[in-house]
Length: 464
Ligand code: FES
Ligand SMILES: [Fe+2]
Image (cartoon, rainbow, N blue to C red):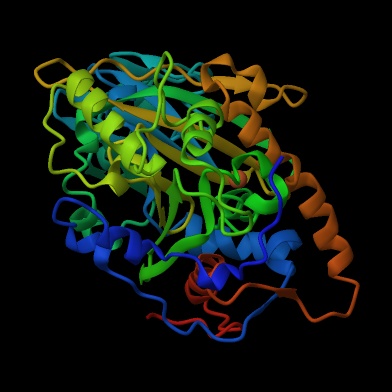
């Protein structure tokens, strides 16, 4: 059992001070700090509970922004396809040719039936209602009694397309025909991720569950480490929750860096051996077998970073001698507007996605994916299928998550109560939620950008 420290968290070692202890040159993007003044925001709970705010999000966000549809390895072969659904929108994402991925609006041009309901591999899309059939390139192949429809003209039969962009193995779609390029939308992200080559990874784990909360509440559970003290007390011996750095890097990109193998400033420092053992047992992110001993005078952080450096070099067939301890241990978590978060660094890279379930602001689809590096010289395997958890199943029921299932259950157990509590907050006259100025700045930025896209400007919205 750990005892609470009398230290103020503000006197804790900062992430930048930890970088000073690195033995190798530190990449510039880790040295970057950016915390602009986002204003004294009292967050309106209508953003989470109001059907009208949801409707505005559909019009101004989901119909207009780039959003993650899938990984390339989810559709490795020509004809592989899936449906990407968000609110009322549905897009078919298909590998139309070996090097070409297309997205079509998932609706038959005849009487509107949804064309694709299940993922699979096909050489054509055939509507089950009256058999209208399209080739993978979107050109019509067959219409029974075609002459009855000739009046519409040949152009009327081409399947309408949405935009597709690809980056590091991620497939993004944008329903807006006027959308700018994905790479412009991603802003600083490609530069920050250039060493992490996520295009040489494959999706080794994918869990999906419907949660009784707004999509933003689910995403925000992963935007700050301020919740660790209450929600994950078992992590305090090895997670620097109050040491975390938060950066608003650009309009669409924010980042938190939470240090691992360093105790929380909220507790008295435990011995290095305990920090090391708890990290191995409870983090679900750092693994080794057998009896290990931190040498006298060495920190748990240095010991575990060196261990990962050696294990990853062996397993990935790469040389990590120039990788920082931070990139081998820490939770370096980027948000991409509107609804995904991606871990940077050389640990298995977790990806979170949250999106509305239909038009119910009280429900969302929440997903956890884990990308694993493919050893140098090996082909990228197909991504694993989605493991859907039923409403009464927990993340700890997904054995592939290991100890992380317990951690995610802790996170997500809060969420239906958050959603319900928001409804009471709408009545309490307090004037909105009070967000931490620094530690919850990424949540401020999410809402700031939503307001910006929606154009209401209620909360000092605007481009940075
Ligand atoms: S609705 Fe699709 S063929 Fe009639
Ligand atoms: Fe958490």
